[in-house]
Every structure is written in structure tokens, then in C-alpha cells.
Image (cartoon, rainbow, N blue to C red; front, side):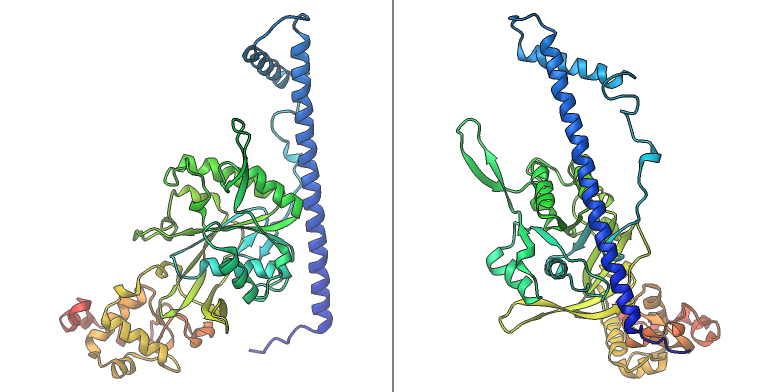
Length: 457
């Protein structure tokens, strides 16, 4: 197979020019959309004022009418005007014709992972680095440099809603450690509250159930292109039950509509629950309505083959082809501030990522370690020599590990770990090798259970 030549400088320049053109069109479409929505809101407001004026004129001068009665008459008149063909709203007042909808392609803040104008959900256990990952993405956006997989990066303003982390000793140091432009990052952890009884104006914690208008104004005034909410449960609102689907949708549906109106990417961080569901989509805390509201679902999990590494995977994608999994590890700079080191792609099946490593038997851990340390794939005999496990029982263990996705079988009955460098040659990967009947078709496997170690029986 011939190696592909690297793109020439002229090709790279053309690609960069095209990306800049796409960015200009994106900003133009976003501004046009905001103006259209503002004009619609202005028209509706004018209609409300006209309804109030007509109701007031309908009563004789000097007649005293209660406010409740006035409100009832306004509502009655509005409904009459709304549903009358020749009313103020006109014949096209209900619904929108599809011919009036402008077709637009999906635009990506991070291709295949974070779309503009949609909600993206990032799940993970505490301590795996999902918040650090979100800040790393935000830092890339603040400067416009490429994303961690070297794909094109947009430059723009980021809004952070992170009430559980200190801006002084956590947020700013971590973002500076990965080269953030702090002038492009805005914090929105509080909202202004007015007490009409005491006349006090004070700050209170930001709440999605109460302060979506504040968020929308912050996006519009700063022309923000990314909002990070970390974590979701801290800002849902005190009267919102995260386990009730209806409550969750009452908050996230308006948030999704806000994202669409402003064409802003919204990235939400959520913890995992303590369940053991086989369906990874059910492992996020709270109602299933949370992941349902997101168009993209992302996951950060510990690498099954290396406790020090993390896997960044896509678990839901309603918009495009699923992006490849990435591997990273957390390091520290000279000041002790953590940052992410990216280690390339990996091939772990997403269904195996949330299986605790402690559930693996000693024998399976020994096999995984032997495969990880080897320079290339190993056959059954070689694995037996490296681990000291009996050949007869080892064959059955390997078969079970392959079925569970813990190891991968390659050519000629050789095995390796899912993220081993040998996996880069995809032509070697086979789900089954019919030529290797000695390892797969030997009926003695059914009798080898007695030879299994106690932890594998």
C-alpha cells in the first residue's frame, strides 16, 4: 500500500481559507438568526400592547374595572385575534411552513463531538478529569487553536457556569496551564435578584430553571460560541427533581431552544450513578430525559488496560458518524497545576469502559498485563509462558475475554490488548479466524472448566 503524501502548502492554505470563509458565513448566519428572532419578539410585544390598548378603550371613560377582570378581557381578546383568519396575526400565525425554513448544515465547534446550536453531555465518574477536559476545550476555543485531535478550532468567547470550583485557585490556573486567553472567558456563577418587598438587590447562585434569560443575554452581548455548565445538578434549580423526567425536560427543553436560537454550543458535565446497567446511556445520574435532551453524549472513563490513562469516547451521536475514541493522561506542571496530555486514538469498545478493573480476576489482570508489556501480539502458548497459567484453562479464559471485549484476537490466533500499538494495522484485526480451528473448535474446551483457576470458574 502506497503512503499518502502530506498535503502541499497550497492545499493547506486553501483549506485554511475555506475554514475562514465558513467561519464568516457562520457568524453572519448567527447574527441574521438573532435579528430575525428579535424582530419576531418585537412584533409579539407590539401585539400585546395593542391588545391592552383595545381592552382599555372598550370600557366607558371613568368606569372602574378590577385588574383581574382586565386581565381576563385581554386574554379573551388576544385569543380571538389569534385564531381569527383575518386577525392581527394573520392566516400564517400558527406554525411555520417548511418552505420558510432555511436549510442549514450541522456546524461543529469540535467536529463529530460538540455541535453548534445543540446540547452536548459529558459524563464521567468524579476524579476522572471531565472538568479538566472541559476547561481544556474552552481554552482551545478562547485562542482558536486546533482541537486535541488536531481538527480545526473556532475562536470565540466562552461562558463558564462552574459554581463548585473556585475561579482563583482552580479555574484560572488550570486554563492558564493549557494556554487560555482569559479575556475571552466569562464566568456566570451568580444572578442578580430583586426583593420587591425589602427593595434589596443581591446576588444568588445561578439557576437554569430561573435564569435562562440571563444566560441568553450573556451569549448575545458577548457573542459567545461555547457555554460550559459544570456540573448540571448544581444549577438545575432547587425545585427541580433531577430524577423526574418531566421536571428535567421543563428545564432542558428551553435550554435546547436557547442553544438553537443563539447557535451556541452548550457543553454540560454530569456525574455517573452507582448502577451497573449494561446500557451505558443509563449510567448517568438523574432522569433518562437528560441524555435524551442532548444530541451528542460523551464519556470520560478510566482506561481498562492502564489505570493512569483515560478514555474519551462518544456514547451517543444523533448528528453524524461517531468520532474515534481518544486517550489522555493527567500530568502536572512545575506549579502542581494539572493539565491533559493527549496520547492519540484507542480502540476500546464503549461497552467495556465502565466495568470496574477490580472486577477482573487475577488471571485476567495477568493476561492483560502480559499483552500490554509485549512488543506485539502473543499466541496462547506465549501468553501461558508469560503468565504461568495452564494452557488448557488459558484457552477458555482468552475466549471469554475476547467475547467481553477485554482483548482482541488478530491473525493466526494471536491476541493483544484493545489499545496496543499493533491495533493500528486494522487489516490484522479479525473477530474470528476460521483457519485456526485448533484454538476455537477443540471440543476439549468444554471439558477444561475443571482446570480453571477458582476465580474463573
